[in-house]
Length: 207
Image 1 (cartoon, rainbow, N blue to C red):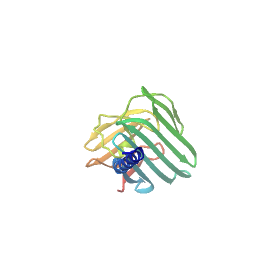
Image 2: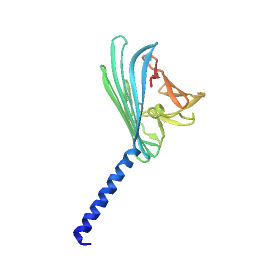
Image 3: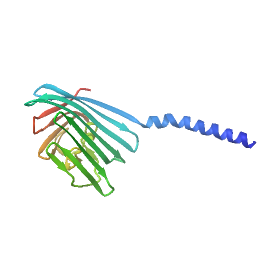
Image 4: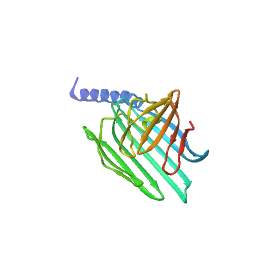
């Protein structure tokens, strides 16, 4: 075989390999979405979408929500959280809240020995490092039921807290004096009862 034919043959083989590989790589990336409504005293005040995207080793969890209600004046809140996991461990998170009363964001990054924290929320700031690595966060709880023996990382406050099982399918997490309760049915998150300094509310699954 002359050199020109040899190069042409190698090019065809490489192209065939890439074409065969492309569907396989695409199949490894999966996306899962869950929709929820946010309710106060039986009234819907907002919506929330949770999404899980990833493959075998890297997973991204995201939660986006929009809330509008009246509390001694109109409150309009857009909130998002992103949590990136590798090999089952949290490597970085980001959350931000945009309101008609201000903007706040929080970042948590794994340095290899601990989590570096730069968290800001309404009347709250925290830069204290957190020991790790950790494997659970609020975004992951939308898609996976814990056992009640895990340690949880709050993406908003940049602190860790134990996940406590209080009955079958029901778990509690206390962060900064507020307790959230997660309810699962058949391994699927059905609702969250959220304790808030402003007003307690619920996040209920729609589909």
